[in-house]
Image (tube, rainbow, N blue to C red; front, side):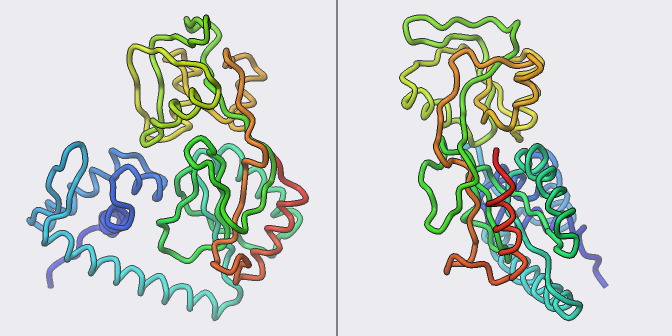
Length: 293
């Protein structure tokens, strides 16, 4: 019997098929761009068939690749449905929460640890998506967090605000910059991949032009924040995700922050606006009363 490829390579392959890019797939899986690319290469070598072709700076499925992707997606959907049913036989399924990797690591996990103390009988499962929240997520989910109002200014219908969000450029205190005549100038602009428009949006809303000589791109916001902290350039950041580095003086905000009132939101993923999972309502009500950025 012919051996199957590693499951991790199939999960990466499916994620690229569902999201449309390696970068978005990496964000969804909570992995780096390089790790997902390596898993795709592993699958291609195992199959011995070209699954993608280069198209500009991205990838495009070949006919064989797209046909196999549909098969893999359908099979994994069936496995997930079967596993959900298996868990239901044991009892209530976990509350599935969608959030970005950096947001989860920096803010959400500490918040959920407090929730767990108050409600030890409610299980929460985390799925990684982009900071704008994922409309392309195809799995079963209950709640979605979103906070980057530069990239996603609209507020979803049925979303619940947990508090305001402030966003602005930050850099290490010894990193050279100038702010003169409405122009913020520095050498290197640090960006999260697929977040390039955030600088343009901030400049338009703040009225401050940005002048930089080069840019550096990182797969995750957390890595971009650490790069700025290490003196590699300026990065666009929500204040509440870097508050510790601001308080310690490791980062400064030379042009201040833009305020987005009610900018941190959580939204029931169900179309009707009410989670089908009763435990999700317990979490949502607790968040309203106990969580703020």
